Length: 519
Picture 1 (tube, rainbow, N blue to C red):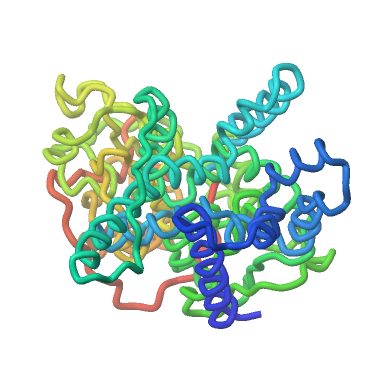
Picture 2: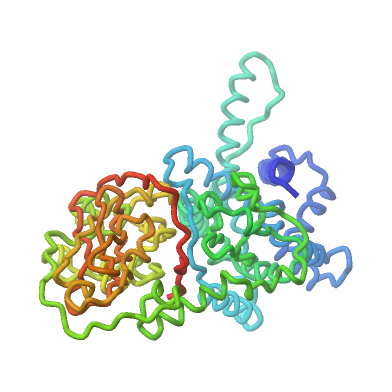
């Protein structure tokens, strides 16, 4: 199924549900019949479970319908029926209107251990000491407390204001409603959750749902077995990254064609935003659940094994013998500036905004980001720096720009990141084994994703690298692939202020190196 109908239906249905819940809590005249309220609440998961434990009747087992719905369609409960989840979507949309960066989510690794540990603790506490912790974290309860303590008083004040005005004109359609006040202490918990969830939804989308909420964690586990789910068509996908940027659950790893269904809330934004129609919603067949044996996965595994034994992945993928230098290089790399990560803009901006939390270092899939020692000076200790002897900046990755909490690394879509020049390539001919040992190599040219490094005739049948700094993005794949030690024959000198690289003139060559690494 395609996006337009699915997304429009979700928006319409969830809007109606949210309005119904809002009216229930701010019904000042108590005009809504109780049976309608019970019917609506019967599909709220935790209230339904507690009602069933108390009444032991089939009519009180609305949670069973939620379980069936989850096994069939995934976490549609969180998008269609949960008022707190719908409220988070509203806040997230408001955040996107306020500041565009709030609309940029990007894939983030799940807090799996934390999520399931919190769920287990909540269930254990509920069994031993009662349901206080469960109701404290239950999304419906949180929504209800917010509506009771904050939203309803606002509606009462508005009602009383207009009631006074209308009464002066002898119109008595509205009545004065006493404003109920509570002990100051009882506002602490709803205020704390409102601030927590409000800020998270404004800036991080569905992070609360996929990290803290026990209902979301439990239904997310069940959704792994759902019949319907969002699917990738790898033949159509161009890895543009728009689906990941638009995913408010941060659960789409487009580089691996993987959707974490335990976090996906079936909002269908990814299907709507995909320009290549590579995403759809439908039945997942058994042969689609195990597709790890295709050629791309074989190359991925081969490249991973190559890195584990210390060989450049690019050389391993070409099934060539790695040229082993007979002697060490002698010309030191003349690096005038360190290379700071994409999204920093400049070293000065990075130092001004970075708090050295190491989150970008943690999420970097190739370990090229390392904590600096004195590369940036004393003030930059522990801030992230690119070390191309340890790894390289993946051409198809912008994870570090998506997770930075201080905006020291500003979000970059892949199209922009691929044209951001972190530094310029430099070639030291006197270190190259093509010259020093008359040995064919070319590892650097094979690894370069933009062909800023290419081979030209040298002596006899030998070819030697040349560089084009205009199209170089400073990713460091050439430096990482170079087998020469201790000083590389080719290296990237950092740009203190990031620049814009030119697009390669020739059509991009299909490189066989793996484009993603699991470590």
